[in-house]
Image (cartoon, rainbow, N blue to C red):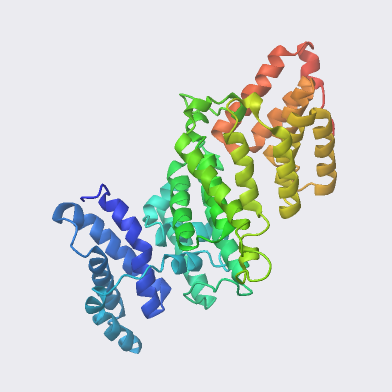
Length: 444
């Protein structure tokens, strides 16, 4: 390679484009995806030794065509498709069309569960093998292969069309929302793993950022696309400071901010500022505005609001310089937009930092009453209550909630952090040991 890219980088870039071209012409997403995967495996095996061909996309298309025809040869009902595939080598020399977005919309179809959509996206758009995806999700390869197979079967049964929905169409917000939601979940799983021995799975968060860049490049005028990418960049910038030398979790307030990636902070901040600047461009509102422009830019959605919160954190040189009233205000708007109780949990923390723990604990009590127990067994509810109680100078109830949170989380680094917090409160408590063990936590 002469441009600094590895064979793996090139294959990951070409994977969705080759699949998009193949599936667009043949219409059989499941069979095409299998054939392209076989072509990618063949390329990964031969190119490092034999060199990258002059037309790598054409090579992959021809190889996938051969794999496809091998599978279809015994099926006489598909002879017309086989003949179309046989002509593929002459078509491969034509201009390359980028159908990445169509592939991504297909993989994130609403008919799929989020877990299936993430797996299929990593394979079809990310260019990862089934073994790599299985390793990233800590499941056996056979289990992941079954998940991907079921996802493709569900797509086939749903008669999903291989196309990008038209922006402004009635189903456009929902379809684009599905794509962004899958990328958001993928990033979150990589940034804070839901379970297992490590806090981060950098390969997942990195892939989410890469795919979000592609979507933003293809849809530069979509405010929430830019907002999601900005959120990822501003959040990912903090990753080097989130763990200690032994993988232990370091909370935001205690992080060494000199370790934050300033390049990602600057890029994410500029991207976010750009989305709001475009809101104010002449002609984007009122008479003469482009159809759908106000809906696509206009009022900030959940991703831009979260990016704005991340940007406030990023601009604080020290933890004590954080503008907590502004963050609390942004969380209030985000809470109104999403109605998500986890947002309310975050707002409670911001409220405590801005106005003290008493008001925040009252907010948490209201949330517990209104939520009807949905968050009762969520480790974050107990962790936030423990933090607020500790701030309020009530160490024994705080200790018990830290212990409950530790018992509920499936993340080893989080469990160790929460257990350590409980142990420190136990050791520093002025009460005798027998009272520490029998003091009960308040309900709610």
